[in-house]
Image (cartoon, rainbow, N blue to C red; front, side, top):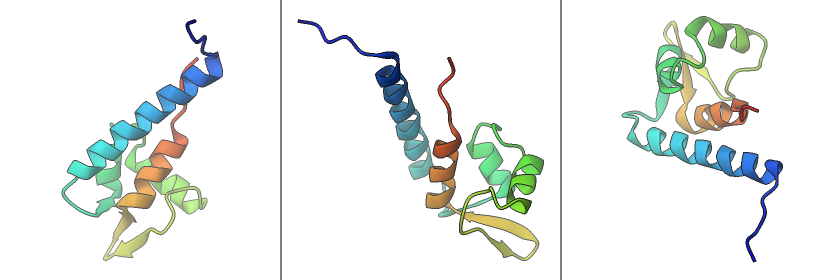
Length: 91
């Protein structure tokens, strides 16, 4: 008998696929860090540099970021987890 999947199960499967795609892309990223500009590019410009700055100022950006000179820098692992966590499956 065929298994019938619920809409919620389907959304979870899509979310897992999104996560896998981001981790595969992260593995190809040439550094263990992102600048704001790099994270914007990595996310497919889902988050602009200005939006990331606003989120950081409210404490809602990726955790564990730091400054290197005047550049905000994010650790790759926490930034990818953050991007995945903010991804939502469209209705």
